[in-house]
Amino acid sequence: MPTECIADLFGFAPVERRAVVASFDGGSITPDAGGLLLGATDRALGLIDRLAGCFRDFRDPSLVEHAVRTLVGQRVYGLALGYEDLNDHDHLRHDRLFAVLAGKLTARRRDCAPVAGKSTLNRLELSGPGRSLYHKIDHDPAAIERLFVAVFVEAHKRAPSQIVLDLDATDDPLHGEQEGRFFHGYYDGYCYLPLYIFCGRHLLAAKLRRSNIDASAGAAEEVARIVAQLRRHWPRVQILLRADSGFARESLMAWCEANGVDYLFGLARNVRLAGEIEAELAAAQAESRRTGRPARRFKDFLWSTRDSWSSRRRVIAKAEWTHGEANPRFVVTSLKGGKARAIYEKLYCARGDMENRLKECQGELFADRTSAATMCANQLRLWFASMAYVLLCALRRIGLRHTRFAQASCGSIRLALLKIGALITISVRRIRLAMASAWPNQRSFKQAWISLAAAAR
Image (cartoon, rainbow, N blue to C red; front, side):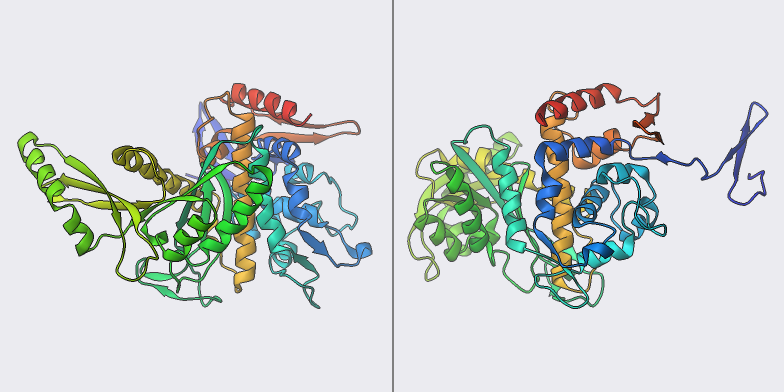
């Protein structure tokens, strides 16, 4: 029971006859001291400066308190640290950790904090391509898209011989009467349908789209852009596209065949395909009944649709009997060699890991917090969240590769390594963060600091 009546002082159960009270009067204490690792990661990548370079500022310099770099960095760091709402920044602008990350400890004007509040950040997000009377910061969408691929290329010391690009679409629920609002029957709600392209853990594209479209709409254009940029750096790299049946479309497969890109797509089941594997399915059923366990057979054959495909293509079928019923699956591929079972089980099924990447982007970095009125503003929000993902992935790849967090999710890294309480003191000669002495992950923090410092040289 509370035992104090003083305003803003919270009383709790006593311990050894001593009163336990708390209040928000600690001064310059941050809960996010681990954000220093994000700053060190950015120094190794130059990500914030390069992202800020994708914006143009038409404001009067004599009236500007917060530079574009400060605004962009504040937004990306905030998302990486778990602050999804712009309203949070009305308090965070007074957190000296954010001032340290921005490289700006004091404001020129007395009524301002070193970093921006919600209104200024909101004006940044409402900026669009082109200058207007009320929006004097604009951005270059093509430059932002190129930056994702550039960071991916720079993550490799040498050109890989082959890469696999995973494509997927997912739902992004709407928050009201927003631009591009459509009902999607599969997801049973009003949503956007963003397209994501990953290579392993690396995010190469995050494209916001309306949901009244086919899942593959615009995929060929996005892939063409990414492949062209990759081949300028790695002209001999072999590229494989991998996706579910929503992307097994003539336009995308024909583009791949014409441009030397392989593909491996799921293929929707139909009566004709099911009839092609009746014998294999019967054999799997007989084995399953005999052993009491699931059984599967594979068949490799050439196939063509009646009118939508321009040529015959290789199809691999999995004829499986499990839990007392048939479970057939099909994929279509341009790959010439390889055994059917290996292509399906080891190559195609590995695309399931992309679901974990989508959970990180949307569940842990708030890529689905697209609640602005316009699609342009929501696309920029999606890119900010995606850049926060890129920054955390770089921290994991560079700083944590020799620690127990080398395979941790972005949310786990945030909780374990970024959320550290610290007292900040600023003197003439240094800024000191006195972090919690009992914090359990000090060894991993030290290893990350060493690795990031070496990468930034």
